[in-house]
Length: 222
Image 1 (tube, one colour):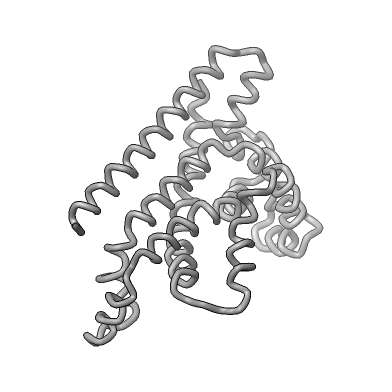
Image 2 (spheres, rainbow, N blue to C red):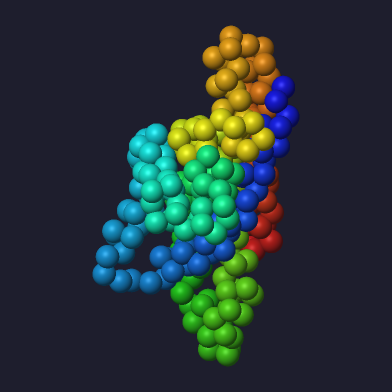
């Protein structure tokens, strides 16, 4: 059992969720409430990582983060290390690749907020920030919980993006999915089965928590 790989996967998933939570709130709320020219294109761009093969998307991210790219050069000059094949590059790639898993459920959650409720909050003199915190989030919360749990579970099992952008550096970029692949390549079926079972258990637990929280919120609001 590769506990270091499991710990790295949990750390990667945690950072991805923490970064994407405010992004999901801001982008999901904006897409739910605003009508503007090109909205369909914006939503399509958000969903693009969901339909592209991970290796294709990972290749473009590897090029964008590479030593010859502007971003890669700025990162190397600032921190003295490359962005690709590093944990920081893995986090950046994971955040971008999980945008649809975070934003779309959040958008659906905010779309469930009745317009008259927001109008009433505005008429009561609430600022947009106060309305978001006191009125909108309690209603849209199930969508946000779903977004974060899906992001966490998907990050744990991601393979193609991790392999393309991070490689398989122990303690740095070797996640649980890569470790399972290495076990299979080494004909260690028992080790691969044990690690796969742990990932299944964690994913099942996180999804169960989603349904439980959604049910509690639904009863409280009902």
